[in-house]
Image (cartoon, rainbow, N blue to C red; front, side):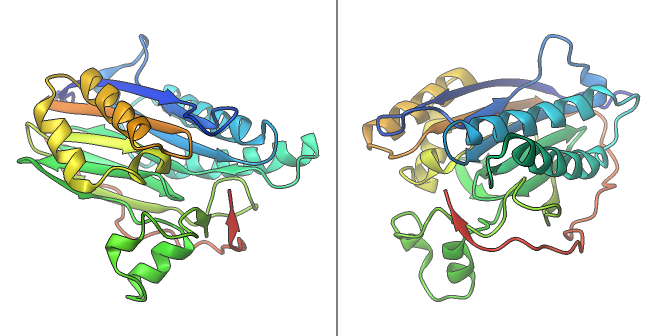
Length: 272
């Protein structure tokens, strides 16, 4: 039975005009990727002094990719153990290096058949563009995100709020973390964008729909989004992973829970 959709993808990450180094990392399927095992994409936005953020984001995506490479059959449940492993690995590495707190956001997408499975921690985002409309599939784990969901501030103030980057969850800042795991049914013609907050903070949802609908390839979409973020003077690293589903094959069973795992979360609130 064939679970492999036809997907074109591309990604781009830049340091931006303000930061001295790029703490973002991105992941796309490599040459050894096996379509029958599903498709894995991810973005991570590191945090920590000196090179701590770069280390955290890279280690997280490396751990995720290694977990995928060990699959002998398609299984979205690997995301759960991979996120657990990445969180503990980054936490332990910070202790070994004496770097105190270092961590990263993570938004990972695993596509199997006509299903999209998301693992999400922090304030990077996943956007679905369908019929020229963009919708955000993730919830920001930030102080401002909590305020917006509590209706203390309107949604249109999130991007410009002074505490926009004050995270309430991240990979690696404690021994435990409580990610969001969700699943979504895909359709032929869908496009998806995974991005860090250096991108979405200066690009509106309508812009994601407009650029994705206008450009002809994932590569040109990623490039246009990054150029737009730079033109609008983003104050952070900016990264985008773009993929377009041109054909859906056999449907995959929806075998991942839609509710977050009820793990204990000892993390407080902190800023990058």
